[in-house]
Image (tube, rainbow, N blue to C red; front, side, top):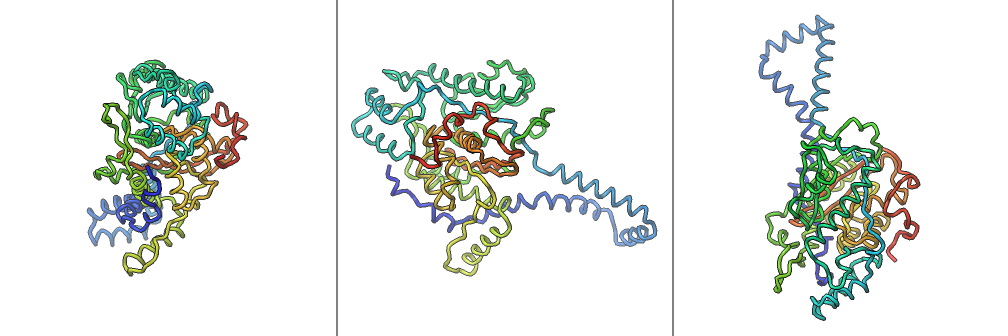
Length: 453
């Protein structure tokens, strides 16, 4: 796969689709429109001109009625406002699994295991080595135990054991951190990109922790590396069901916005760019097409065009609109202005799927090395951990002591289909690294100076 031949994302802003920008502004004003239109429509439908005249004459003569009416209208509008506000989801805590050191795998070890498997030609091995050298991976990333055995143990049972090891390890740690009792859990959402057994992964968790019989459990599969944020949005849809009496102990984050976009789902190129299938030898794997980076750019453009009006300061929106009007209406030969998202967010957690995509995002969204550090360090230390990479990146920010009260963090996930999803969090308190337990970075954070060695 040649990275030089991939589509450059720098040209993406020149083809901004107005419908996604309009969608963002629609989200912004729909609640305000609702507040005004509902009471006005109801009142106007039952009042004539004479009713209005008599009504105002009566108010002038009776100040008490005027005060009472004002109070009642204020209460009604306030009630409508709070009812129409998006429901908030609080993040009590999170945990990231850190495998045992025996599962570390260097590039040299991986290539040796690939060669010993006997499944690859010399040409395929050379290609693997080239990809690994360009991937941004370090020599301390992890693989499953089955890939370190000779011969490779790629059985279904071994995959189930690995899933249990990771899920149960993380959940045990999270329950210990939060003090939440299993009987208080009313909703469970589990996601996995590739492994989808029967009984489902969510059923495995319910059985292991003996969760209550009326729990709402969901298992998301086949949604790629964006499924983690889809899980958050699914939880958000339940609103009040997630807000328990322990709300007062919550001290971490609150999502201000979540946006899931699937703009190219009907496009064959987008649909096929990450595709699970059999090869000529009937071995099941995932094929990545040369259009992958292009589709990622298209999906990201649609997502940020919708999100922009909700998070960007007015100055950036004016500059963006001015350049858009100049190009579309006055046919001026100018580049579309790319808003500075660093003015909207303090931190960025971008899915660490590969170095090529991270390079393009850094260049075209004008991110700094400091902005990209969590993603690059996560890719280097833990590799591509699918949708969980965003949480390793957030853990990195905490370990570095960067999360301050009021800070906004933008998580961006990409997934097959092709999808781009965003979740925005706001810190409710400053995170003290010294008080964080079981952070996967804490015992080695000083070894990462902020750039890939």
